[in-house]
Amino acid sequence: MALMFQATLRLKKAVELINGLDTAKFRLLLSRIVQKLHLRDERAFSEEEEIKLQGALELEANDLHVVLETAAFILEQAAYHNAKAQLLTQQLLDIQLADEKVQALVNLWTANGKSVAEKLKQRSISPKQLSEVNWRLNLQMAQSSMTKMKLPNAMFELNLSSGSQCSEEQVHLEFTHGELYAFYNQLETIQNQLDTLS
Image (cartoon, rainbow, N blue to C red; front, side, top):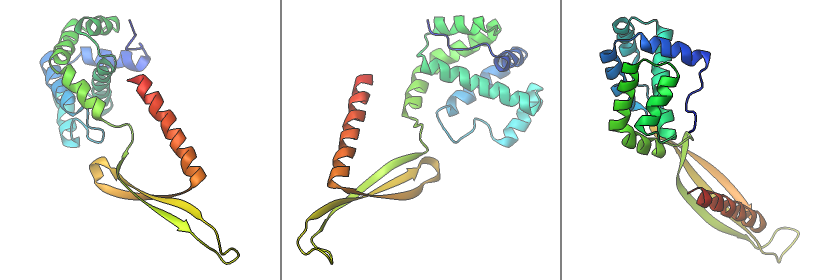
């Protein structure tokens, strides 16, 4: 059984704060967090909503952030470990989370765990994604000191997009035949390693 949560001082403080929350409000908080969990650049609550939450939950701004981050962390860990309800229950009880809070988390996870895990799988760890590849082959036939030569090189243009900002960036690469062959071999090695992971 893999340990999902280390009982750090920050986690203990978060557990104490969560245990002090009204359970009905905590359930509502969790349902909003689970809806936005897979979105990298989007917070679960806007700044205005967080100010209202501070009043509703009777928490300071820093304490509210600790609660929100910890709830998201618990759900991310459950997704990462593909936790079953029984395992998640036991691990949450082990960090001293109150029974009703554990039940709220486990019920939410049981209802939404599969879809959350699928959405998180789709989330990239990189802020930029390759959207298009253009290439062309150049063949240098001569230069001032040599009249007969054949020097091929490949030019690549990689278009990178930044997910939510919809901005594009172009990266230009130039390879000689030997450099391109070495790059190809590295890609083959990476592909073989990815294949062994699946």
